[in-house]
Image (cartoon, rainbow, N blue to C red; front, side, top):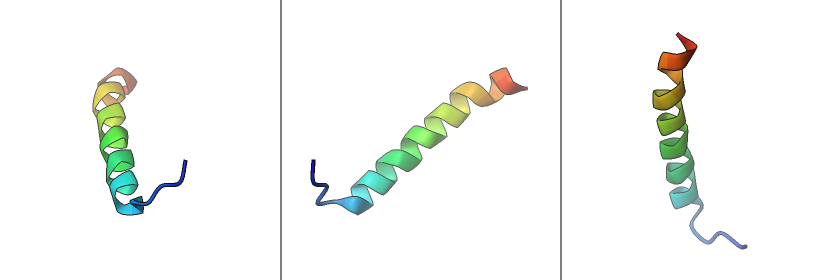
Length: 29
């Protein structure tokens, strides 16, 4: 797959990372 929107991919990755952090951070603490 050729990604023509690297900016959107970066935003998507940031959102996914934030969600994972929000979900797993309380469990880590």
